[in-house]
Image (cartoon, rainbow, N blue to C red; front, side, top):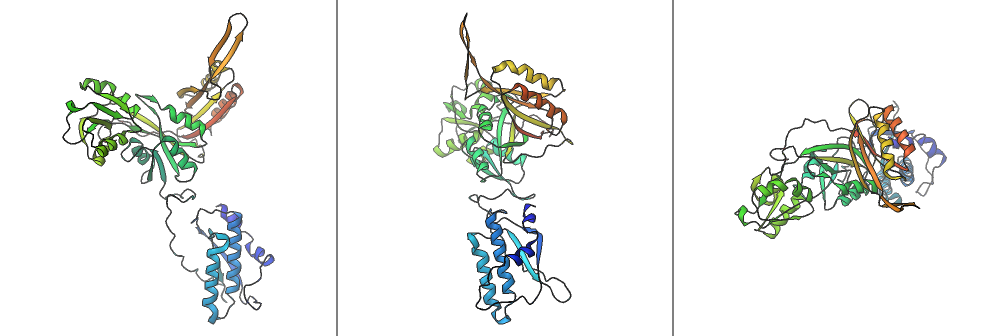
Amino acid sequence: MQAISHVQNLNSYLIIRRSKPRFDKPVRLAVPVRCVYHSDSVQFPNGVGSSRVDWQSSCAILSSKVFSQDQDSGDKSNTSSASDHLAAAVNGHKTSLDLNLVPLDKKNKPQPPAKQPPQKPLTITDLSPAPMHGSQLRVAYQGVPGAYSEAAAGKAYPNCEAIPCDQFEVAFQAVELWIADRAVLPVENSLGGSIHRNYDLLLRHRLHIVGEVQLPVHHCLLALPGVRKEYLTRVISHPQALSQCENTVTKLGLNVTREAVDDTAGAAEYIATNNLRDTAAIASARAAELYGLNVLADGIQDDSSNVTRFVMLARDPIIPRTDRPFKTSIVFAHEEGTSVLFKVLSAFAFRNISLTKIESRPHRNRPIRLVDDANVGTAKHFEYMFYVDFEASMAEVRAQNALAEVQEFTSFLRVLGSYPMDMTPWCPSSGNP
């Protein structure tokens, strides 16, 4: 742990930099004092890490404990209360290092430290570090409870604390501001294609892809209790869900208009809140249970092999490995436009690296490139950013060499993440997601 390096040579520091005692008469140390550092006592109750303020607080607390131990037994309660007050108020922070000074008896056996009070639980407003292994992760997703993204977050991080966000960008910001530890967001669907908004946000923000999860999607047509299909005049849902059920809704013979909303579960919630008896929603069966709707039609996606791929985002990348299948995502651009694409692809083909996705998005900083020719005039070419996923880990030499070659042909190259592939068994969607 990083905190260990800050407490090395602590005794020598106190001897050299000892401050004046807060008592009327000088005090001499009557017993030897030793700093006992417990590796399991490093905690971060207020999000204050091993900073300079925290280090100064720890030293001040140590000094106060050294002087308090030499007081008479009659003044023991007064000095302990003063020491506790100092520990709670130094520099406006509580120390994140639990440094217990234990006097040694004649047999040189340290006395056990006093039992610490229970820590106050963190709230969503705390800007605290990510939980340690085994703690509950806070995972942001776009939508409301009952959304497919919530189910994907639960599959990626079982027993996590799911944090709903009204927009995709809010989920990115929640991780960047330490409100959430991870974000799980969709990037592509087997029927509807890519979610372009999230590809643009991946480039705009500095989060790293640390994993992926593929979720079978099972759509249902939901309406208020007592509403029949022939009464419907409108169907609302997320644009992706509408496109994934377009043919099936037409075959049902519904004379309805289709309207897009922010997410599938949000559509169900909107119908229930406003008591809309002429409107149906395309959402999951769990959304029907949460918002008291009936399922008018089950499994209305155009293809039973309907799968959405989600990526897991974090503030820091993970260490790539070679003991399991990995996938790496990159984005690049070039000043000469799309002519460089063949050279980039050949760098992967030469090393037998399989590509799983190629996505192009407009280059927002330079959307059009003008090429002047005296004979034929001015040509206008659209500029693009290229997103590529390939099956290799950045720990592999062939992947490193491939990107080194790609960098020679591009003006911009960024690795979005190198992460384990989702290798869970696949089955067609049926029932609840």
